[in-house]
Each structure stands twice: as structure tokens, then as C-alpha cells.
Amino acid sequence: MPYEWSTTPKQLTLWPYRSLPRRGFVVFIAGTAVLISLPLLTVLGSPVLWGLLPFFIAAVAGMYWALARSYRDGEILETLTFEGNRLLLARHGPRGKHQTWEANPHWVRVETHTKGAPVPDYITLSGGPRKVELGTFLSQQERIALVHELRQALRDHNARAVIPQP
Image (cartoon, rainbow, N blue to C red; front, side, top):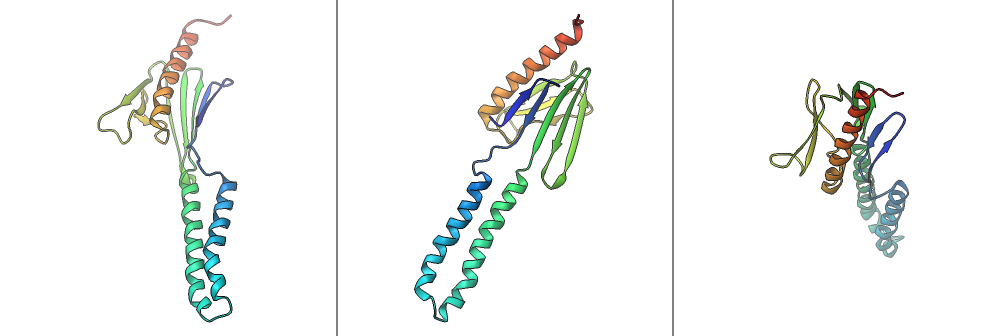
């Protein structure tokens, strides 16, 4: 799953799933360049090559640009940290965008929205100055599992805060 829990401090880290790793990106671009250039071998040495070459270069460059843009747009990292009597959500978005949200975990509610939401089983946290979304880039099954884990983590954290530790 594209999220994991750590214990010290109690923290949830979420990131978008990548179906094409960086190495696969390089292999795909190289394979595309090779396969597109095969028809150019038949016109090697003729003036037609110079007419087709700009289109070949534009096709490979366009594919590279589109995949690189997809990687930049997918550079999202959400971190939810339980620190004593505060819950801190930090979201590092694409192009260096950074947002934070803070609330008392005792008052935080985990809500799922099924109707009128941007994605099925949309997760929001409320209890601070505003409602914030969490894990919109996850699949529907991952969001359903995350809601249960998140509610349990909040219950456990609030129970530890009420009962003094020896």
C-alpha cells in the first residue's frame, strides 16, 4: 500500500502509487526511440530522412515531457504526526507547495464522504480550524482500509492520553 505507519513518533506517511518506476521510465523512452527510428532506417542517406527527423525528435521529446510532467505532478507526500496533545498534517505537493494543519487529536473526527465528493470514499479530518482532505490519490479500497486504521490510531492515542503512563 502506498502508505505506512511508523511508531516513534506515531506517524502516518502517504504517497501516490507509481506504476512506472524511474528505471522503467528510462527503458520506455529508449524503447520508444528505437522503435520509432526503425522506419527511418529505410530512408537513411536520402533527403527524406531530414523531413522525417523533426517529427521523430518531436515524438520522443513529447513522450519524455509528458512522463516527466506526470512524475512532477505526482510528487505528493502527506505526513500525519501524533505529537502529545496535537495532531499535525503536513502536505508537500508538486512544485514545492507546502501546507500544514494542526488540531487537538481529542477533537479530531475522521469522516468519509460518498456523495458529492471528488472521489469515492473521500476522507476528511475535522476538528481544527478547517476541514482537510487526506489521501485523495489513494485507490478506493486503500481509502476504506485507511479510514479504519486512522480511527483506531486516534482511539489508541486518545486512550493513552487519558490514562497516565507509569
